[in-house]
Image: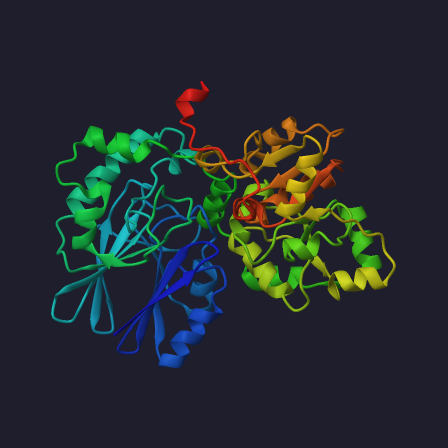
Length: 472
């Protein structure tokens, strides 16, 4: 038997490939499914089932394409109502795969159809539990997402279901079972997940706050729902794509991989209303870019920030990428439902420059240079990190304008004033500057290296923690 966790850092997501005696299953596959097919072929195995733990919100699953290409049925837990052919399993139903068995454990709470899959070996021993978003390492799935799709499902109702699911279905299982969750640290599907991506159930019973044996239902609901940040706006859109269906990834790639000359690219931008997305490194972008393009670097938390910054998954997109990374970027956009890339700049930004097209830039300075300018005159500093980061520590007299809420944060910016913009390391600040630049804000200067560089320079007064209650 083989168990392979296929972890994607950008989404903090774990898909799973499990093979036994020439048969395999894939659990919660990503949008691009060829790697799973190749993996099975390498083992000489047939993919027998595609197991889905729930209708995902943070990414578009590859269940439809994988099923179509392999003939493997898609399996959901009880109460699921997909808009396509699928096997909706009963609680306790078993699925034989080679010499092993998967048992369905219906665990509503994160969503109502949420289901875990218990792996049992050929001797009847419980070995592993694939928990989806029901149980993470150090946390549990947030119970407020399904209410965005089904109005009468309040987060308290879902949390109550989750309390029962954990105590009645998961906690009675053996301590030596290995927990394989769908997400790790960095995912917005939980509050405080561990960086570890697997653990024993016994250790989770000891260390996971949500599995305390003496916790009452009321205590559980309060702890699980306290401190939840609003989910990214694209989450409900991804849920509906996962429920109703979507275009094949092959169609998405074909549509997006249209190489456009600089002139054709400019014409497409002017005639279609497409958003021009530049995915190069922030410090490369700052030195020169196509006017009105926005920068979200592909080597950062790309997919989540695309989802946060581009509200409509059907928005047409024109791409500027490092040469040779076009397919990668289109694929990563499709992972979170952005299927309408309509072309890319052939030859990248260098081709645009060589064609003599108009070029824009954003000034980016070092922390030391910012200190020099501050010594000469007062400056306006915008800290675009999350409010929690800002409250923990920030430059004295800086204003907090979180990128997460950019439309509100823009209201703090006076077009007639100059602002020095920083985040933690330089990734988010360039997203912020580029978006505002495209909207006519011409006096934003990026601080390269962000707050990390500011602290390391030793030239700035940094505040201590400020308790939010003192700000009221």
